[in-house]
Length: 352
Image (cartoon, rainbow, N blue to C red):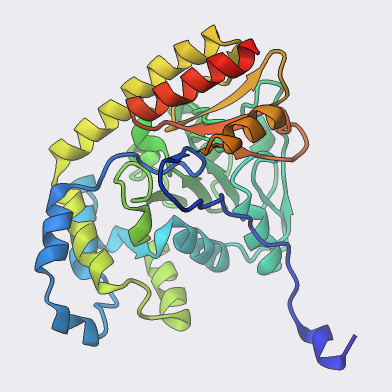
């Protein structure tokens, strides 16, 4: 090894879902929304003043922050935005987890948590999900340096009832409890209801799933003014201009169209519930997902074989070659037409 190589930081990186290219494929592997963003966002893009791109964007993201604050009924000093929820979550790890005690997050969860913890030198422990893939709140009642968990969880889709979320908060008044709600709009009650009672609660959400804007990279956090101020202090010490102008403008327009948002959510959740019935008929079982995906396993056929057969037909789903997950596939809910194509292939393949 050359001397300078000893100074390179080495981490095991997060592996994103495959982004296949081409036509006539069905992409159900990265939990994107199958429907387009709100039409007002498209109109704003067409009308955008090209000359404005030569200037730096608003570092405070004032318009988008105001839209989110008004929509969720919180103060503008309670909202922080970033380049997708990954940016917001990473900033939260960097800001809030500096204890000598380990932070806690589930052993089966969003795999980026472990990457950030190791990148930033944060001690961590990973309480195991139970046999049904559920988070056990009691595992988070012990001493720690902070808590992070998705709700609904990923890749399982299981929702923790709000009462259990509050139980975790009640047992952890001295640390930050971060609830990652990337999928909350597809079912369940948000922890936003608890903000007035818990100053140590931080909630992170994204435009990538329910709002159909994964390509714009918009995420946000809502918490007490104290937490948001701390996040901004770290942000301005790291990168002042995190959000690009098109994301700021189009994001605000997407928030304003509540009717389209609700209609799109209903289409996805209706398709999800029909998909549950179809998967059961084909011999699959799965946790009762409240997200925009299902985490399925077949009673006879190994998940890897199904994954490879689907991929050969240009139907992309997510396979995790990890302990406890090797016999499961995470399948994003697509349009009704995409799901019909998926089920038609599975019926033929499983019969053979």
